[in-house]
Length: 119
Image (cartoon, helix red, strand yellow):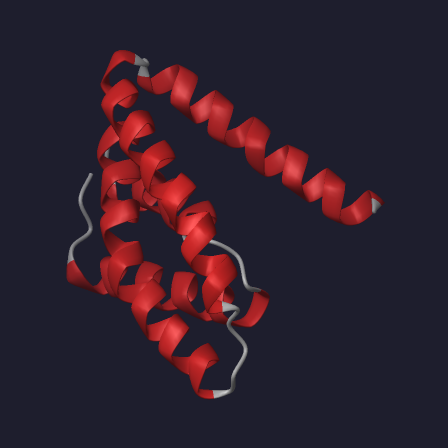
C-alpha cells in the first residue's frame, strides 16, 4: 500500500535525523519503514536504501569533513572492501527470498542492539 510523497518525505526526514545524530546507517530505519509504510518488497527497499546512501553519505561526509572529523586514508581503505562486498551482496540478493532477508535483517538489528546495550 503506497502512501506517497508525505510518507516518503517523513521516512527520509526521520532516517536522516537519526543517522546524523546517532551515526547509524539510514538503512536500519529506512528499510523497515519502506516495507511497512510504503508497501515495498524487502528486495526493493534494500536497493532503494542503498541508492539513498549516495546522497546522504555525501551530505554527511561534507559536514564531518568541514570539522576535520574524517580519516580519509582509513575511509579509502574501508571503501575498497565495502564496494566489493556491496557488489557481491547485491548480486546474491535476488536469490534470497524476501522472508529470509527480513529475518536476517531483523537478527542483525537485534545483534547490534544487544551489543550496544551490553558493551
